[in-house]
Length: 240
Image (cartoon, rainbow, N blue to C red; front, side, top):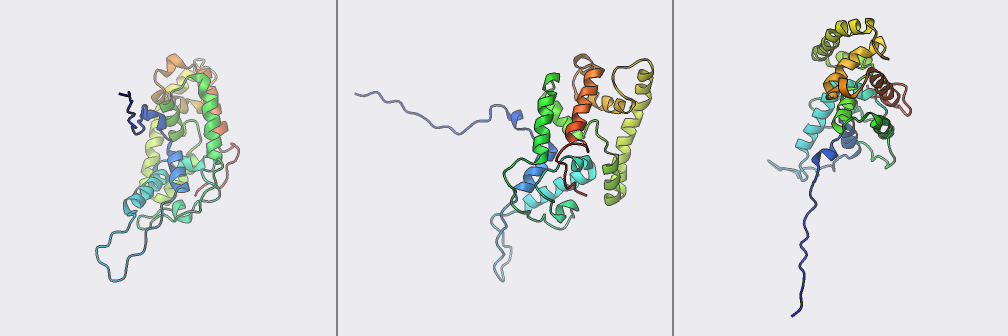
């Protein structure tokens, strides 16, 4: 009688779901670089025909992502280019009725935003930030000048965009007076325009005052601006 061992093959399991978190700009890059297959045309004289694959829900999600970024996070469009070449016109100015135009297949080489995010993560490692904190920094554009992008979004979206911009201005303005008082009393290495970013970082980084000094914050802001700001390398074809 021989001894045999039965091996059961199990599907892969997600051990840590947080390890796969993407920033908003990475989500935008992915859906742009990986367009769906076009559904077949409906047969003649057909009623209640459902295409296969049915991309109606997918196109709705893609359209909502573009609308969200253009209306609420226009600073992401100032980051280094997230695709090779120019985005399709329908993605530059999303409409509520049209489906996104399928862009050409993207090459497998890293995009400028890929390189910028890698450099950002590498240079921020010495400060001990968590993945969630870095993701929020990228999504919010902490320390970057978003005024020009916000003004452009206001012009495109009308009154709704103005309300979004006003909310941000109120938050920044509410912290300005208190932070200026701290600066006059002999603050650290932060410049005057950095105190609004410091107030935002206090909401992003847990126990920021215990973990990071103002000199550390100044270095973090400099890294963000050098990698994601308007002076970063490979910044081409900003969407407008």
